Length: 246
Ligand code: F6R
Image (tube, rainbow, N blue to C red; front, side, top):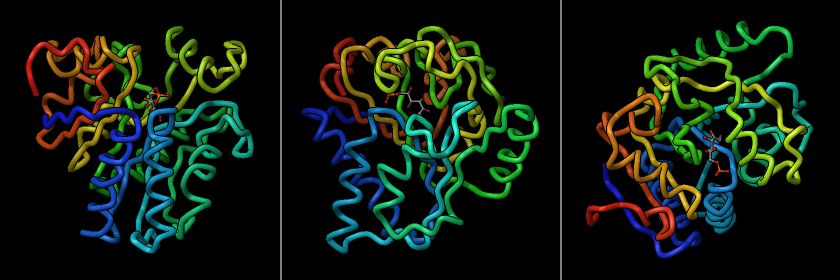
């Protein structure tokens, strides 16, 4: 793992945006695995800025998102479909046909997972962007998820519902869907490279476990210790519990 400590949120966002830009410039038809959540908002903003300056071209880029809630339509502003369009896709020249976000029908979750996984089996993700949950989840792979998991549906943990209510649902836990579809840990590990970003004190335990703890399904992000090309970019608060110097 390469670990970079960022000065603050803006610095973390810029560093991660630089890595993603380099990927797009070096391979214009690259496949990007993308994440939602509050952490990558600044990074997406930076990519849009560089696109508008003429420095980036998304016309051949393919994207595959990690996850989506059950029960939210695409025009619901809390859906990850909406998030990705609002924060990135609507502002760059990406081809909508190249965008992949899990479709979640309410009655056929197994079929939805199979469809997404079949699509994943046909491509290789060049760069997978990840955030990390306060409980160490990556995607919506909650503690206890099998490292061999492929796209699956998930019962979200209470801690995730709380975190996401705070950030996205105006604090209303009842409004947060209790299930989601997520790429599995194996799908994530199949990416050629991974960039994980984290900021804030509420990530310090998860970050410590991911980097210095044992590799265990109880802290899903720790599996990244077994991946050959992982870059972690964290701010000071998220890095606070790390014992070694990086
Ligand atoms: C989002 C995702 C999640 C988030 C994680 C951190 O697509 O897969 O794993 O990356 O929950 O979320 P934030 O950035 O909101 O703290």
